[in-house]
Length: 199
Image (cartoon, rainbow, N blue to C red):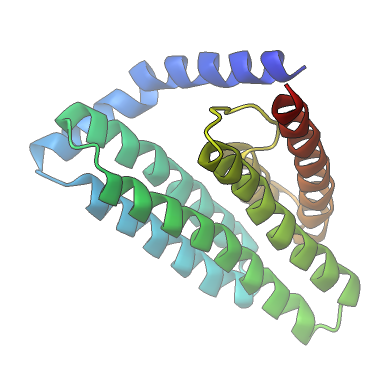
């Protein structure tokens, strides 16, 4: 199953590059936009999205989450296009990615805490912790000298769940799906890496 998800992600990425990514990246090159600027704009988009989430405007919030997700794709593609890959850029990108993923969920927690919906607040809190843990496990395994991008419900899948969920469904349904997804994703990645370490 892991190989299937990895191949699906790679196929989707390769198809998207020619249709969605390359044209926008070419425009960014022409206007002399840097990868770090795109990264920061993506984070600002998710911050604005968070504001709309706190006001209960979830559809607009979801659209901005998707915009932020696209920015995350464009900054890496732009860096490769300009041959400006750097440790500083990767550090900034990873930091703002993790922060942005948490911020939007904190906005949802704020909204539902005002409504007194303790179940959604708890589920959203679990989603934040488990989402960050999924990313942490990859960082930790690589810190131990292993290279592995395996695992399901990585950040792009989580962004799709949040963005599309807010646009087309109720936030409560989105949070329920997200909580289930990150729970499965965390367990899957833990045992996947545990098996890798035993070898």
